[in-house]
Image (cartoon, rainbow, N blue to C red; front, side):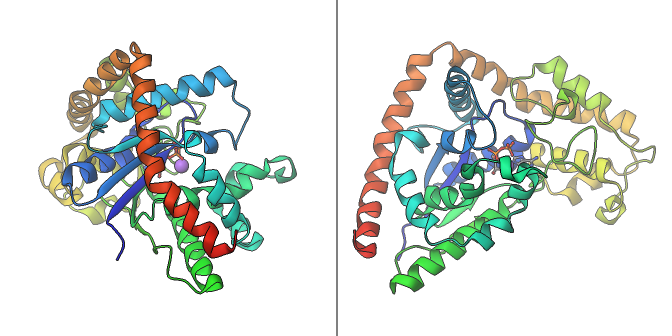
Length: 334
Ligand code: ADP
Ligand code: NA
């Protein structure tokens, strides 16, 4: 009974990595081009201020850069709704209702909260704690049925489902859909190039740990050449990667970029040394990513066009969100 609709978001917290691209953006483009769902993609600037203070000019610049990244990666504003969260007030309005549906205990169990708040959680923002309720509102204010994300967001998606279930139950309605996470492909969790046990992240202090979507061809090739590995040759089957996180990561990245399965990649590269495999991976990464960084740089020269796209996207988003929020208020008795 729900329109098939995809929603997902990325924080304009500064920079985009190969992890964001393979785990999220590339999947967003695939779902847009598949044409089987309406696709709604968001720059979640209200999430970006939960972790640390951002200078206003920095946040605004990050948001425009992220919008350029979406478009350069293949999001077409004529096919997808592309907008900035704070321009559609319905997200924050629904989030308040969800703050009153979600339980403290649910939030306390979130591993992202524990990781980001750290030992001194008394000093973390209330927004960081409530983050997953805002994320549930982002998704459910569109009655989204599917959410493509990387593996690190799985727990937040489960909480979104719990909020929908409790709301529907408390108010005796069948109003919010029970959203399906879409965590697919070979690279749902891209790891750091310096430490195969850590997620590749824009917040990692080591720039060598990640590929940024703004890196040029030389930087991409150099980071892959220097990526931490082990001295063994590549196995010809998946089992052989089990205790080799760095090797597994590079193979997963190759599979993600070349749109193959890990088994297909290993059939091709099994038996090769890293001295041979890394240049193959570097060539592939440069071929796929360098055009994105070039296009991002070009779009960044046209900030007024970016702002126009975002304003148009916000209007389209509001057309879906406003009636759903209105109906929610009626259900709640507001
Ligand atoms: P980050 O985690 O880089 O701060 P966000 O929280 O805004 O970025 O995440 C945006 C999307 O990118 C989410 O769907 C997230 O799951 C995905 N993502 C982030 N890092 C990775 C990674 N290393 N591997 C795969 N997907 C990732
Ligand atoms: Na994340």
